[in-house]
Image (tube, rainbow, N blue to C red; front, side):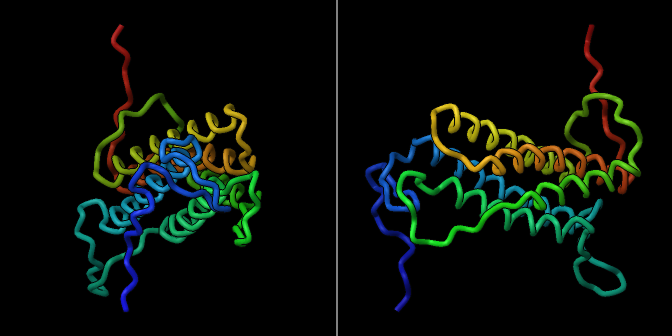
Length: 202
């Protein structure tokens, strides 16, 4: 017998945290992990658009199959880490869960920093604020960066409301938004797509 996806338990605007505590779907903790979930979906889109290539052809002439961009393995790992972040945020710190929740590690942050260092080593010097755009994959990276910043802000708000958040969660989201920005510039550089630098009207 097929399992039904819908449960009807949230029809009145409440949901349960990991641990069983019922809260409003407008609770700051739900908002935080909802933003992380949205970010994860954008990362998936980014991976698909990068695989399609600069002309969105999406096929390797030699193999007849989709090419995998160099960033693909790390993007998949980021998606996995975002599920870890979401699980952490979805836990009620006052009600210990019997479920085993995966942890973030300092090495997860260091992996993003290493990837950024490798990309910036071949990028021209930063000349100012970049206008998002130029190609769908690059634009999508900037959208993901903005959603990541929103997720980060929602985590900060959660902490300011006195809710416990694992410190590495905030650190990871902060570093991830930087990584997405650098990957956007690196992709533009690789594909020969000029970035437009913002020139303030004075």
